[in-house]
Image 1 (cartoon, protein in one colour):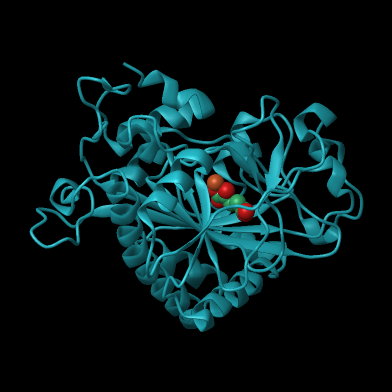
Image 2: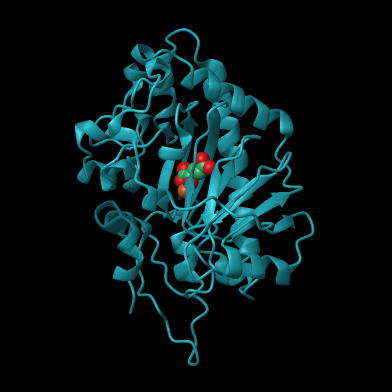
Length: 350
Ligand SMILES: O=C(O)CCC(=O)C(=O)O
Ligand SMILES: [Fe+2]
């Protein structure tokens, strides 16, 4: 069992925060899913999110995107469009199953993988208009067999291929974004395991499939509540239905900016660990997902983390910029996040 899976075992979730509503049979928004206006905040504004062509990235542009936005689109990433299409089809296939079938692969309270509400549901009184399916290498075939006893090969093959592509891409991206701070491949060897000469290759990751069904009253519902990701970075595929919003870091008042889907593009979200490694320079931006009345939206979030048991800490600290965070492992960070949620980062301040 991976240390991440073990961690979830130690932080069980309440039963009433696991099984989602049967959305297809719900025609009006139940009180349990009505969010108050201050939580939903005003209409999102639009500002163009940076776009980085990663086949020839400009260092300064990339650094600016990580420092000022913490979120950017990537193009020319090399992930075949046919694979993205297949991932989307398989997600729709899974989430369109009737509830009595999806429930066969439900996550148990101390498990990290399977079907259910997202784990952050336990930090909010109101419930979200979404359902999820979490995958780690060891769990994929077991859960897929429960969903489709005779017909799971295609789902598994697509998700395995996608995870492989995401792993390579995330390693490339970590090297690129940290490289934009002037860190060399040698300095990053311990963090990105497939660089030649690395001592370990056990980086950890997991894939979260999200589904936001058509909602009868989207103005009062929340797809995925505000959070930062605990990863080094997250690669998000969101198809062509809008829904992702990020908090505007430039405005004094918290406002949300819609991250419009880009044809063939993927979105990169900087995680809390990159914020720590960059000594606070890279932002792990707060983001959320909203829902709509006409389209079933799905997204796939690949959370990339460092190798198991690796101690990480600020790499760019020097005498003029003393370290803002103490050293920690991903496991330690996830444990803090599992109990303190959005306040976890401040617990590691020096
Ligand atoms: O569905 C989305 O747009 C956001 C998903 C997300 O933020 C997550 O899974 O952590
Ligand atoms: Fe997220």
